[in-house]
Amino acid sequence: MQRIELKGLSPEQIDRLLPEGLVSLCWRGSVAHGMYVPKSDPDSIDDKDVMGVYIGPLEHYLGFGRKDVYEQWEGEWDCVFYELRKFIGLLLNCNPNVLSLLWLKPNGIISENELGARLRENRDLFVTKKAYHSFSGYAHAQFKKMMSFNQEAQALMSQLEDQLTALGIDPESSDAGIRCAHWRDSHLSVRHRRRWKS
Image 1 (tube, helix red, strand yellow):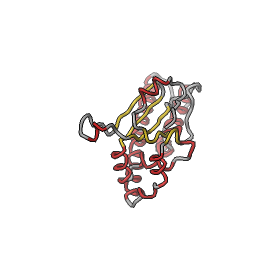
Image 2 (tube, rainbow, N blue to C red; image 1 turned 120 degrees about the vertical axis):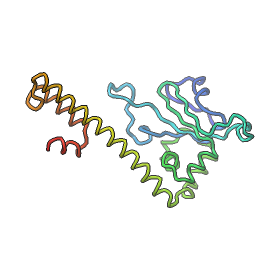
Image 3 (spheres, rainbow, N blue to C red; image 1 turned 45 degrees about the horizontal axis):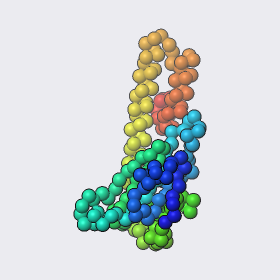
Image 4 (cartoon, rainbow, N blue to C red; image 1 turned 90 degrees about the vertical axis):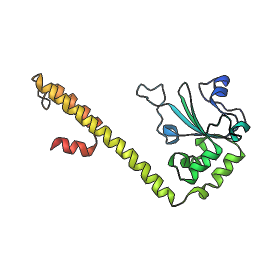
C-alpha cells in the first residue's frame, strides 16, 4: 500500500494514527456525505471522520492483546478502526455504520489494498433481509435522539419565556421576543413549532 497522506498531519502523526495491516481507509460522517464545513469557516463544528479496516498482528489472533475496535484522534482527525473479522461480523449483521463503507464512491476512499477492493466488489453478499431491521432500528434510535433534543429545547424555551415575563418583558412583542422567536425557529422542529403556536 502506498504512503497515506492526511492533510494537516505529519508522516509521524499519520504513523501514530493508522494501524499496521491497514486494508481500507475511507471517509465517513460529514465528509462522506458531502456536508463537511472546513475549519476555516467560523461556523464549522466538523472534524474529519474516517473509518478503517485492518488485519491485526499475529498476537491478536493468538489471543494476546486482542483489540477488535479502536478509536484514534489526531488534531481534527477522528478515526475508528475495525479488525477484519469484527468488520465482517458487523457486515453480516447489516450494521449501517460499516455497511455504508462498501458503497462509497471512489472519492470516498482514501486508501485501499486488494482485499479492501474485493470486499467492495462483493458488497452484495452482505445485504440480506437483516438490513431492514438494522437500518430501521438505527433510524428509530436517531429519531429518538432528535425528539429528546427537541423536548429539551422546548423546555429551555419555556424557561426563557418565563424569565422574560418575570422581568416584565412580553416575550411575544419585544426585541427580546423577536430574538426568542428567532432562537425558537432555528432550534425547534416544525412539529414543536406548531405545538408552540397553539
